[in-house]
Amino acid sequence: MNQEDLKKLFEKYIAGNCTSEELDTFFQFVRNKKNEEFLFDLMRQHDVEEELWTTEFREQMQIAFEKTDDFLAKKILQPAKTHKIAYLKWLPYVAASILLSGAIFLGWQKWQESPFKEPSSILVNNKTDNQAEIKLPNGELIFLASEIKTPQLLFEKDQVQLLQKTGSRLEIIGKGSGLLTNELLELKIAKGKRMQLCFADGSLVMLNSTSHFTFPLEFAAQERKTELLGEGYFEIAHNPQKPFFVKTPTQLVQVYGTKFNVREYPDENIVSTALFEGKVSVRKRHGDAYGRADFLTPGKKLLLAKNSHSNEKAEIENDKEIRGWITGRRYYNGVALKTILRDLSHDFDILIDWDKIPELRFQGTIPQDFALDQIIELINQTANIKLYKRNNLITIQ
Image 1 (cartoon, rainbow, N blue to C red):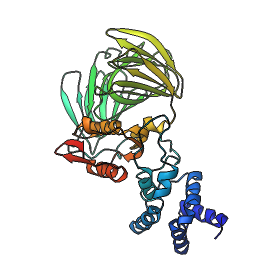
Image 2: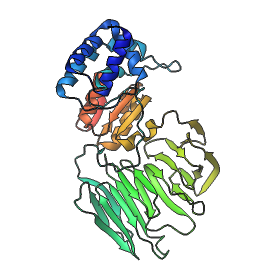
Image 3: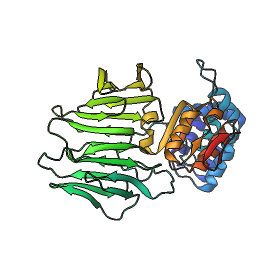
Image 4: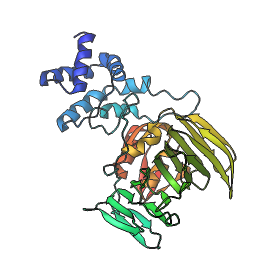
């Protein structure tokens, strides 16, 4: 079979249109060591869609792609020239998985732009059934269940209601008399959970695991103020006469209608703001005062260091690294293993033995619905290390 025939066969395989005879031919093709480089060229040229394959099919593909490990490690996983640390041996495992379950994908796979949607299917395994807790303006504390059968009225005042529409979605509906701007609510997301909040003006925010978000039941006439500790992705309704503010312990972000992501966890030194649409300004906080405004345009991000006056404005090279948590999988491209473990500490009740974690870097994707043991095993299989969990402590052997 010549290369043109093999290319057509590969295209049929990607589309899921192969007959049983053609599948046998395809498996023979990928098992042949001589075809590895051509096979990998084909994979780079195609945007591989995720499919749910049968168990038998997965097993056959696992065997088939095991043959490509040496090629992948040699051709794809070259250490970064500007760093003296090696990538984890990740992609060889990825190759065996990319067309099996869609759990992991290579860097050339097309990023699927997803609309802002409910995170009900991307919840990390967690012992608690609580999605979040919310402190109402009257001081009452309510625990929000991860699953509810019907919408729940949480708070109502002056014809404005706060509803829990689903386990992972809150909505504010109604219009008050303008006297509710000091009726503040505090929302705390549980470990391993995500939640969406829809404001009465149509603005949306998705809140990541362990985030704290403070907001009013009704925005003031001249401005819309909120506070965040953790991570949030915002889609703000455009209103140039009524700017939207997100205050964190380190910065103040001002927007007029845009899509952006803000991340500031208390255990991380870097504060980031990434802009995807519109325009924002970012001012670093110095006690009760704020510094000069740094303006961002779409495709830019600003990184602020908490312990210094330095900041860095940079291009967003790949927005899926920032917004992946919204769609249910974290994407990493040359990211330190310590950073990955810090993300896991927001999702799971674990401690990290930081002194023993090596300076390795990682390229690949971790689905958010994986259990902790699955993630540890995944890293161990693909890296020349041995992470293990003793009680709730993650360390390395």
